[in-house]
Length: 412
Image (cartoon, rainbow, N blue to C red; front, side, top):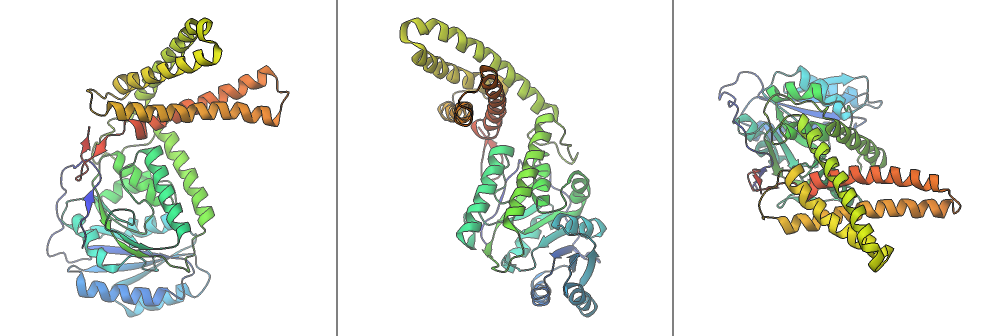
């Protein structure tokens, strides 16, 4: 199997699962909705694979999300015929709801799930759960976006997946590479603390669980997988994408407000919940000083070079000074290492904000050429507030985000 890696700051190992465990060590959940064609061959193949390769007792739980076809009947028959298979019927749809229900009732030390289409090659299953059984890691995820993964899927899904995970990294500063691969595992003692903190009952469940876990410094193990897209997938890409965007916005607001609760399992790199609020307060103070400096510099330069040149020079000088001040005062980065990279990225973040404010005003003039000065002022205020929040997110998640080495430890 190809090499995997950790993506969080290493914490203390948890005790390993005893070698002779009388009950199932692994509870593997297979969520299904109207999967009458794929269910039986997939469950039989999965059962045969685990019987041959998995060295511990296991259980496969088919969790039916309110199917309206023959799926419940097939699941019940499989549960009656195969001693390792159980069936759980839910009255409502939702992958997150299915995982919460099945994982919450399980007593297995390791909980996992995979999609019924078995898009992930089954040889990755043992490498996925082994670090959890040994106590090395808290969560393990399959990734289609890491070096060593082999993926067969159409360009549309490939682009959506990469854009989604890039959005996560830029907004929430996550370190894991693939949030939505349907192939994950978690230790039960960790799940018992995480599940009450995860609100989403559908497709964003995976992402929210990982964000909460990583924020608290839990060990997330990544396994590169071979993955073949299911052309008959039941996933509504547009509805799922919109739901995920709403989830990202909700988590971002919770982080900004400092209301995302910690698990209490391990204190991670983000420190106490109030640190984000402190960073934003310092960012706002630096911004206020930068604005005052810009006005003073503009006033000094305008008589000599004119309004546009004076404004451009003042903005450039203050953008550099603003990045340097935020680097030292807001995000606590010291030394010269990475200073040029930080300035380049800070300038890019500044230009994004400038484009947002300028574009908002241009759009107003295009839609309402005779807009009043009051309307212009209102648009600029709204755009500047949005640009300020966006700049803070970019500075925190991209510009000054610590690099990680191969074991996941933050590197300066």
